[in-house]
Amino acid sequence: MKRVVITGVGVIAANGLDTDTFWDNCLKDHAVVDPIPEHWTRYADYKSKIWAPLPSLDFTKFGFNRMEIMQRDPVTLLMTAAAEQAIKHANIETKLLDKRKNNHALCGIDAERTGVFIGTGSGGYTSLLQNHAHHTITEPGKRLQQAHPDNEDIAQHLQQYALSKRFNPFGVPMAMVNAVSASVGIKFSLHGPNRTVAQACASGTLAIGHAYEAISNGVVDMAITGGCEYVSDADGGEFRGFDIAKTLARDCDPIDSANRPFDEERSGFLFAQGGAAGLVLETLEHAQNRGAPILAELVNFSETFDADSLLSLDPNGAQITRMLTQLLAKPDVNPEQIDYINAHGTGTGPNDRIESQLIETIFPHGPLVNSTKSLIGHSFGASGAIEAVVSILSLRDQTTHICHNLKKPIAPLNFVTQQTSQSLNYAISESFAFGGHNVGLLFQCHP
Amino acid sequence: MTEAVRAEILERVTRVVTEVLQVEDDIEITENTSISKDLKADSVDIVSLLMDLEDEFGGEIPEEDATKLDTINDIINYIQERADQPE
Image (cartoon, rainbow over all chains, first blue to last red; front, side):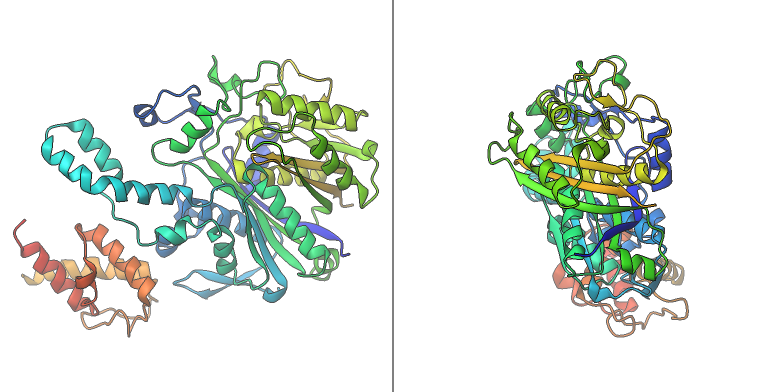
C-alpha cells in the first residue's frame, strides 16, 4: 500500500472564491447568510427564507473561454476552477494544448497514471431544469400571451424561461452527472480512471476516498479529486424541495443567527447556492520526487451504508460507529489520538443529536469539534470536499475555525469556540448523506 | 446593402467568430474565410458559433439555414437578407 499525501487544494465557497480568502474568512468567523432571491417568492411560500449565496460569479475571471461557458453547467465550471486552483497550489505547471478547447497538459506528470475522482449531488441539474422549462412552456406560453397580450405577469414569467431562450443544444452534456469529472479530465488532458460519484451530501468525501484507494492500491500515482454543487435553479425549485422536507433553517432575527449547528436552538441547515473544492492527491514518493509541498497525509478512508431510510440517519448510529471503527483500524490509531473532528454538523435536529452522541461515546477524551457548515451553509456534494480542505489546512496551520453561532451546545463536546493555536496530529472529516451513506477520511499532520 | 452596413456586420461577425473559435491573432478573417476549412471548426464548434450569432443579431437560425452557412460572406448575406424581410 502506498502512502498518500495532499499537495494542493482549491476552494470556491460562499465566503471566498479562492482558498486563501476562504480560509482567512473561516478563521475570522466570517459567515454568509442572505434572504433568498425576491422572485423565488412568486412561486411558493417557503418555511425558510434564507440561504448562503456564492459571491457574484464571472466565469471569464476564472480563465474560461466563451465556448466553455456556453457548453458547461455552472457546477462543472466551479469544479474545474477549484481543480485548477489545487493544481497551481501543488506547484504543477500547465501548458496550453489547444486555444479553442482551452485544455492544458500538466507538465512533468504522467497523464495515464493520473485519475480524476469528483463528487456531486445532482450535477448539471439546473441546466436540465432550464431546458425542460423551455420545452414545456414555450409553445403554450406563446398561445397564452396571444390570449392575454396585456398581462405583464404572464409576459414576465415567459421572458424568464421560455420565449427569450433557445432549447439548448448542449443540454444533455451540461446536465449529465459525469460531466463534472469528464470536464476536469478534458481540461487537464488526464487519461487515468475518470469517475463521478453521486452520494448526495457525502459525494465529495467519497470521491476523495476513491482517489485515495486508487493511489494507495497503485492504480494511479496522482489524482485530481474533490466535490461540487450548484443548486441555484432560476426559480428556487431545488430550494423548495428541501424546504418542503422541513430540513432548512428557519428565519430568525437577526438572520445571521439562524444557522447554528449543534446548538439547542438549531432549526435546520442553511441552503448554500453551491461551491466546489479540488484537491491534488499523490503518493508520498511521487510528491517527494517532484519536490512538491506536502500539506498533510491522508491515512485512511472508510464508508458504510445504513440500509434504513432515504431521508434520515439510522437513530442508533450503528453504521456510523462501524465506519469510524474501520477508519481507525488500518493505521491502528486509538480513538484518543484523534485531535480534531470536522463534523458533518448540518444543524438539523436529529442529525446533530445523533452525531454528537456518537462523538461523545467514541471519543470521550474530547477532540476539538466544529462544523464548517455553520459558516458557509450546506453545499451538498461540495461540502465534504470543502470540509476535507478545512481539515487539511487546520493540520497545516495547527488551528481551526470556531463553530459559528454555538451558544447553547446540545452535548458536552469540545466545540471550537475560539480560534487559537492548537496541537493537531490526527483529524477526521466525516459526512453523512441522504440515502444512508456514511463516509470518513482520516488525515495526519505531515511534519 | 450599403458598404457601411456591410462593414459593420462584418466587424460584428468577425468579433463573434474570433471569440467563439479563439482564432489566433495571425489569422486574418475576410469575407472569403471558410469556417470549416480555414478555421477548422467542427460540428460542435459551429453549433456554439451559431448560438452566439443568434445572441448577437437576434432571432433564430434554423438548422436548414445553418447548413448553408460556411464562409463569412454566407453569414453576412444571411443576416442582411433576414433583416430585409418584413416582420
